[in-house]
Image 1 (cartoon, rainbow, N blue to C red):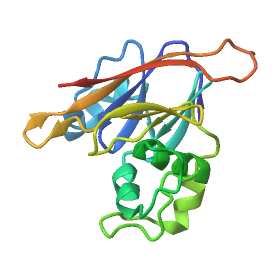
Image 2 (cartoon, rainbow, N blue to C red):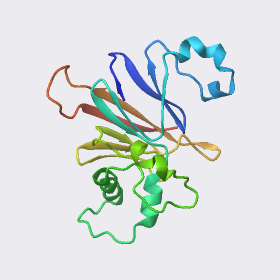
Image 3 (cartoon, helix red, strand yellow):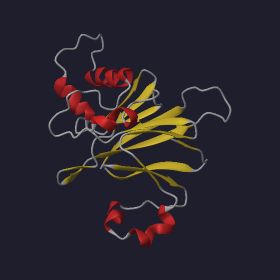
Length: 191
């Protein structure tokens, strides 16, 4: 999916819903989805809801987004580290990016519902994203793996206490320029 607008920003409305909001639309609280949509229809017309997982291109920058805790699941299934990479998260992310799948485990854990009939058309990584966001219960991080900035912002809440969230700044490439990685700055902020 491609979106072109000079004033766009990504936002998360809930752990399972990703959207795109344009400047001028105020940050919408998660409780929005508990109210009738007709109250917010004029503002929702500028919001694009996408699938989970999804690959999204905004102004030439490719984002990979998923809410499944694939880092935790893949780490639990790993039985040896034959790779020269000492860092566990980099090794797991390398598997995800080279296998071109948002969920490369088969069979999945029992708590994970995977519809394999629709899995391959919707859960494959068609290209290596510029930014891959994979929230997990594991420790937060930001890493560059195979030219992709990978971010685990952790969870917004952990039980009764605050967790973390991620903030990203992207300087996209000039229009019509040769395709190259954009300049991305990111940070994870503790609540």
